[in-house]
Structures are given as C-alpha cells and as structure tokens.
Image 1 (cartoon, rainbow, N blue to C red):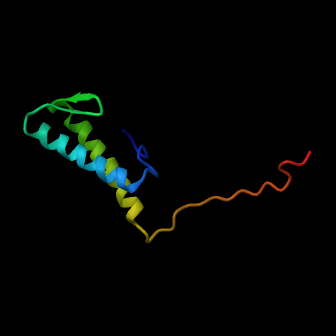
Image 2: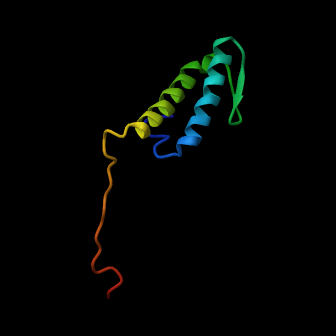
Image 3: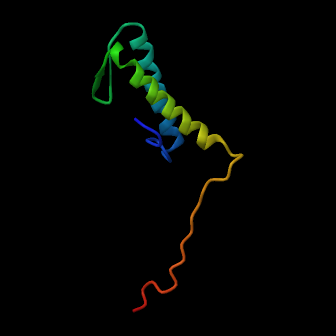
Length: 83
C-alpha cells in the first residue's frame, strides 16, 4: 500500500480492516489461498499482506496517540468574494 494510504480513515473501519487482513495472513501462513477485496492471494503475497497490516496498524496507533497534537492548518482569505 504505502505510507499514508490509510491516513485519516475512521478508526472503526481500520479496526475491521485489520481483522480481515489478519485472517488473510493466517490463511496464507498456513499454506491456504485467501480472497480479500476481490483479490486472490497466495503464500507468495505474504510480504504484501504484512505490509498492509503494518500500514493499518501504524494508522491505528497514530490515531490513538493523544500525546502529540494533530497538525491543523488555518487559512485566512480576507478578500475572498470581494471584487
């Protein structure tokens, strides 16, 4: 997936998705194939599945970390709408 692929997605969705990918990982590690999101996976795809698991877990951890303030940007457009 890549860094930031799950950034800002709802925590409930991330948690459900994490469980799906954990199930896929278990199946593949046991030598079975698995289908998720319309994609058929085999043991060869284990590194990809592990990457997805890391990305999802990283976003869950990021959202749960309340010790760091979230970055927020504000913009002021005083002349917006004035011609």
